[in-house]
Amino acid sequence: MTGRIAYERPTHAPRFRALTRRECESVLRRASIGRLAYSLHDQVDIQPINFVYDHGWVIWRSAPGTKMEALAHNRWVAFQVDEIEDACNWRSVVVHGSAYPLNDEVTYLPPAVRANAIAELRRVIPEIGTEDDPTPEREHLFHMQVDRMTGRAATTRPPAGRGRRARGAARGASAPRRARAGARAPRRRSSG
Image 1 (tube, rainbow, N blue to C red):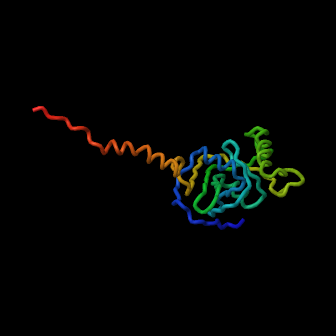
Image 2: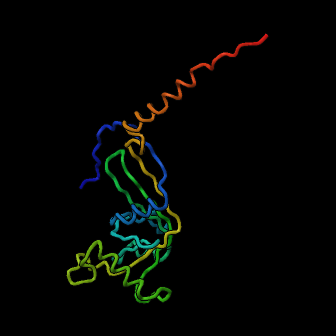
């Protein structure tokens, strides 16, 4: 897949809105590739990673290199995921938090957490940690605690309940009100 998104002229102008936390978490659970942003020596970098989202944590594996060096000096990171249907219909989630190694030396978490992280990652790549692992050099496991989460969406679809049928029904339902509002009340005779 290339980075270019197909564009078809939408039938409706795109509407933008913020995603709820529940919607953000759904996007994170459905995705398996995201982008991790980090800084090292006053330089910001961003790299794609395979990941899973599990109960408020983003979990991924990494090989030794710049990313690991950066995380050793500065744990604060941002992470971004997209679901793109086309240029005018998409969802995007950004999370901010701190990243930590999740290895055997980590003592503040029970060992079951590491085992669960590996099991979750195997939902994306079942061979992780086996002799058939496609990326065995990614032997370091990390997790990011999500401190802040935001999301945005764009859509050209009509709002729910506002399709042709709903608009027609609403027009028909409001017509009698308009007729009543335009009708005059009977005149009273003055006694006099």
